[in-house]
Image (cartoon, rainbow, N blue to C red; front, top):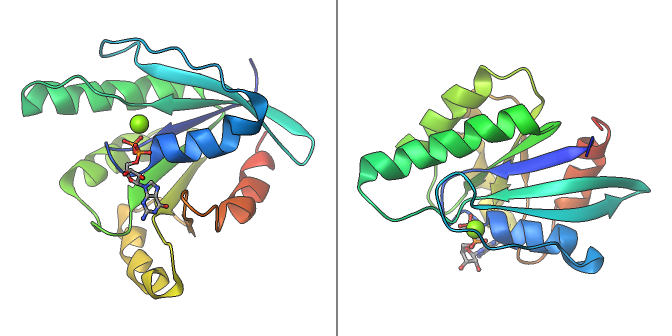
Length: 163
Ligand code: GDP
Ligand code: MG
């Protein structure tokens, strides 16, 4: 595996929805592991003749908040090691959360390209709410709706240029 795109972010932002959208036509290889570090899904996807592996991180084990945050941090660290490009997904309907800021701190220290993907931008009104995510300090933001697919083409055009 050489071209690897990892989707990271806190729970419920829509990572798996995007993963399924990117991989569905290619019959995703989805194995359900339970456990903190093994809970990752790998799938195969293609965009404009470029083939790549997509990693969906998450499905975190319930526990104390400390364990939970540590598990998320661990997933991000593994993804940084493993991936060619990182998609950091956030949720326009919640704005920037503390956990988003924590993840951003880790990603900012990585040498890999990071794309801030603002998900759930299902309509143009929500476009205005997405500007708050510049405060993550990771540069440009990409607004998408994993549900409708809106914005995902533009995002992928940029992402595959790093592969
Ligand atoms: P994950 O925990 O980050 O993997 O998030 P999921 O993919 O499981 O999605 C969490 C919830 O957000 C689900 O109820 C999805 O249907 C919903 N969701 C995902 N993408 C979108 C989107 O683009 N717009 C809206 N409105 N909801 C979405
Ligand atoms: Mg998920």
